[in-house]
Amino acid sequence: MAALTGLQIQKLLPKTNCKECGSNTCLAFAMKLASKKIELSKCPYASEEAKKILGAASEPPVKSVEIGGGASDKDNYTYRIGEETEIYRHEKTFVNRTLFAININSDDEVENIDKVINFVKNYRLDRAGETLFIEMISLTHKATTTATTNTFIELAKKIHKETNRPLILRSDDLSALTSAAIAIKGSKSILATIATPNTTTDNNTELIKIAQENEHALVISGKDLDSIVNTTEKIRANDLNFNNLILELPTLSYSESFQINSITRRAAIKDQFKPLGYPTIKFISSTENIFESAESAVCAINEITKYGGICVFPSSDADPALLAPLMTLRMNIYTDPQKPIQVDPKVYQIGEPNKSAPIFVTTNFSLTYFMVSGEIENSGISAYLLVPQCEGMSVLTAWAAGKFSGASIAKFIKEISLEQQLESRTLIIPGYVAQISGELEENLPGWKVMVGPQEAADIESFVKARLM
Ligand code: SF4
Image: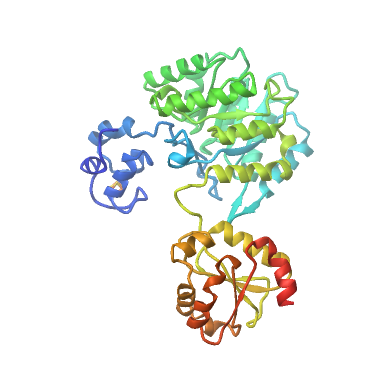
């Protein structure tokens, strides 16, 4: 596959351009296949010949595993993990962000269980135009616990029903795990055994059958990296037609955790070593975990920055103060550096402005927009924020590129008929582009152009001094 170009791949596709794969044409799909951004299975019409030639070779080096989105998923809690092609984000981009889950133990107090369920259901963080949330709940059941198998099963059903999310079912009791897996069959959840330093992989054939029959993914753990490789090699060699695997990497210290995550990703991507080409999961919640006495935040940062597929927090971490910075870090790491994040070019209302309210202007780079709109809101006035198309550039970059000039802002005002919509004729431009004020006034007769502060943080004092 590495040797095949998009055009060569296109010749193996049906060439009907039916769009069912999500691409507009077979050629566009072929180009994505060539760069390993999509899997051949997305084309329902690929011939057996194409599957044979392109199939395994078209898999991204870190396999994509889809979770959730089963028939009972009404809110589209469908996620992908893996599908990665890079070791360093700046080389292209990371694709699927680390999922966050909170763990519940089957013997937890009912009150605490409900508290975690409600927390996961209601937690939302609005950041740079995106609403961030907790993707999953993990349910752990130990054979030695006071909770019965029936409690485990009923809890699995209850959590899945109330949150609509896929679950991570985790137990050292194979029979209980099987029953719970059947109880939420088709939810495309994840099954895991409880890894200990001496974990064996004896049950994997049976577990694969359970996962396969009930449409779940399976976590492969082992006492060291070699034993995990042995297991995944066997699964691949057995041709069980099941490849929805997630790796739980064994670690003994923070530095080892950092190293083993890096070694695994490097082996998968640089060496194309398929037995380690799977997404990973880290349970911070386990009592056997070496991290139990350490800060969850440190473990989570390691997972977010070093290739973790899923990070499971203990229920004591159901805390917005911990999760908000981690969510923000995750968003930063998994934002595509090739695409500037942008907001739609238009005029935004801040507060409840009347038609004579002042109009601030800035570029459509998301961070700039959110900083400026947030500071206008904080200043206590209602106003408009005019955001022309600047291709997602910040103020000075857009100005240097000729995208944020007096002429282009005036042109945008005319295009959206702002003068017909509003009575205000006061425009406040960022202090960094004071030099465009003359050009703006020339292009907008009858308007008053004010030069605002250079930094968004100074908007409040500017408003108090000049607009109130
Ligand atoms: S689904 Fe297959 S046939 Fe249809 S456009 Fe995509 S690649 Fe072409």
